[in-house]
Amino acid sequence: MKEIDARGLACPAPVLQTRAVLQDESPDRIRVVLDNPASQQNVQRFLESRGFRTLLETRGADYRVIGTLSDDEASTTSKPAAKSKMETEIKKIMVMCATDRIGFGDDDLGLKLMINFVRTLKEMGTELWRLVLVNNGVKLAIEGSEVLEDLQAYEKDGLKILVCGTCLDHFSLLEQKRVGETTNMLDIVTAMQVADKVVSI
Image 1 (cartoon, one colour):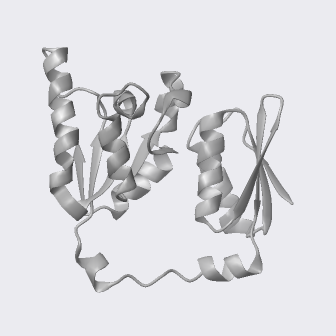
Image 2 (cartoon, helix red, strand yellow):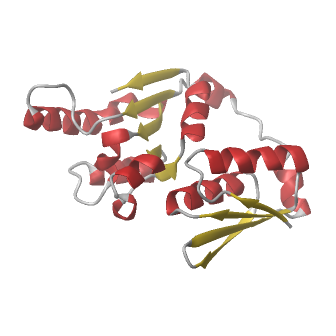
């Protein structure tokens, strides 16, 4: 089994290191050792996106993510699904929120504007492809957020919400996140490349 020691590395370094090993060595089994929950979630989700079945072990302060790739999964993941005509015609818009308030001058007004903004995003319909929350924007996804129910409804309807793990760690909010996927800068940059348009708030 290939083992990667990614302890002490900040996101997205553990995911980048894991991706490099998969590209260079194509192992069927891999173990990634990490020392923080944000990196653990990012690496585990990355491996699962590549067709690995994952198992999480904890030893002391360490997280060990073990990924296993079967022959069936390898053949399935090597063949990307063809996109339908409808999928290729729909515009993919990524909205990035780096704040939990809009504008400067009055925080109460800024919060009201952000609440209205999030609740009005549904008017974008199927063109709203990704919602990315970074910096203070991650506070929109935590317990007690005034738009938490709105975001949970968006996610239930199929919107992918990416919440920056480094930012959650910085504000000590990882355990309070209630919606979205804990993500890293690699996922965010990749989403920007794929999106037809990026809107930053």
